[in-house]
Length: 399
Image (cartoon, rainbow, N blue to C red):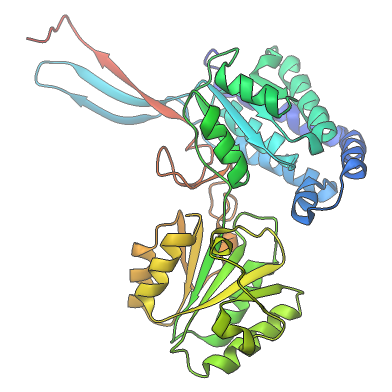
């Protein structure tokens, strides 16, 4: 795709803001068709599927925020002149064509496309079948905005392929793909990694941990845990595992207190065998596999550890590398935890729910990357470019 001027891109986004707003009823009607067809056997997936006026306002806000951001393409990263006279400039450049594969959330159809377009990349949107009506209407809005500004609809395409067709496209794409972002659970990520012929940026798996140290402020710790677990169970930044230091004063009574507080939010508890008796209503962890599991539900696992080192080791073994928090009044202990825990975001006395582009000041995000290449954490506009070297000479040859 050709390089567009910042003005042209912003004109498309200005059109998109008006088009989304005028098509509210059409978007809500399409979403109702998706909701009516959905079998509510997965509450987290259903929650992600819902579109209401607040969600539409959020879509408009995401487009406006990206429109207001600086164009990430063509920014100078470095510049130097070598002894032989060569002038070398490294600048940001578009990826080319990005494919995102995601489940349920129709707002991703807006956020992913607005980021890719402002970053001058074409995007292929492979949404889930459960959101097909919503996604079709939202992509129609994109196409109207593009055509209104004299651009091809090819910048933003919606794929409605089934699993077998998607597999075949990944193996033998009909056009060059530069990056694929699977945004979902482990099965989706494994599927894409197995079949893709280009770079894959992993996103979406949470399984986040909280470690309650022996010197934690207990009331503060409970507040953070409850927010991280219950604020939005469908978020990949939700809390799943709680490690409590066995040296915490009044250990058993505080476990009982935590269980009581979580029960008020209808959180199902599973726990290590020796803790079950202290946690009213808790069941024993069925197998080690549960430690690796991302729940996406009102469910939490509680375990105990003996000290910071054991907590760090356990988190690094079982977590998804997304987010982890330590609850302690000791800043040195917190610093060690944050340095040694291998996650995209690490917290001290704060909820994991802040691992989000908007909350972290990045703005709209394509995904939360748990990869270490090309970027880790919220993948916003600035992170959705690659780079290119421009080398200017006057006849130099290498001898």
